[in-house]
Image 1: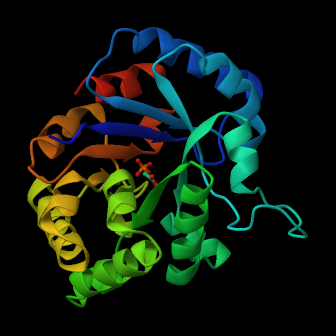
Image 2: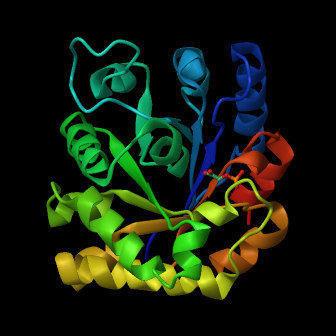
Length: 249
Ligand code: PGA
């Protein structure tokens, strides 16, 4: 059985003070929550203080991006060991906003995944089709290409421990969620592709989150689908009550 994983992607929102307040509220609300991995991904400036504040809680810390190199002349970037040092357990990579606005490539996502695992971090590998790609009937081709590149440098065992996040670009921040059956169809295809690239046992263990306008009112139905193992939540993760409701789906 795959353990559900609920992650809040705060994107470029909340000051350190606001983030600390939200983290404290969430820690309180999630006390005693069992059987679900709870993760929050604050901005880079909040990682250290929030990492400290989350010590002894059941909420894990994630970063929203990284550079693949362990250090070096990459102005403005953050290396995986630095993220590990401030308490991150996960790092989101390949988010569609990074692909769209910052030139992140399929190949680059694969490099980041490799580096994160080398430094003891768990990648949350995001992928998903745009509206044009969906309307052109290219969804499966696109997501399989992104998946294959993201996993290219990993062993089967590493894939089983990684997290994949399927986020149709047209559903992100739009209020337009994929229907549970639309999401399930892609999740099942992704799992089948992992079985094809590795084997069925690996595919059965890998967790695949859905993301895109997840909220308290739609999370349960999404989570009832056999291949949906969690949610990557943007907007609804910025309020303690809505994220706590999602965690408690
Ligand atoms: P949303 O964002 O929940 O606001 O649609 C999801 C994401 O981009 O991870």
